Amino acid sequence: MNIDTMSLVIFVITWGIPTVMVVRGYLKMNPDDKKLAMHDFKSRRFIFTIGFIVIGYFLTHVGTLFALSFIQLIGVTLMILGGILSMLTTWKKSKISSILILVVLSIVIYINVF
Image (tube, rainbow, N blue to C red):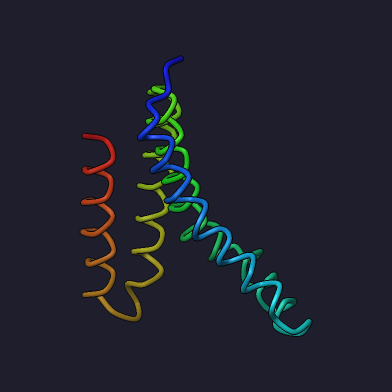
């Protein structure tokens, strides 16, 4: 298993900075806001839409970093599933936004895989 140093640096920057910012913001919240945030993060809608997209993107990066194509394939599958579910939940509110979600996610998947 050969890890490229530049890929490792990009991985740490891409996932480290947002993680630190989210944890820092969560720790600064008051207890009522923390409970509300945890309730939102545990909801089915969040897990099946944003959660699948983020976990899929993370697995795609891990698969690329370690040159493991099966992990990358699992990540792309989760991203596609999360994008479709996100598009379906947004369809009632705005058809243009739901199509925009699908287009942006397709571009991200294309850039990550190829």
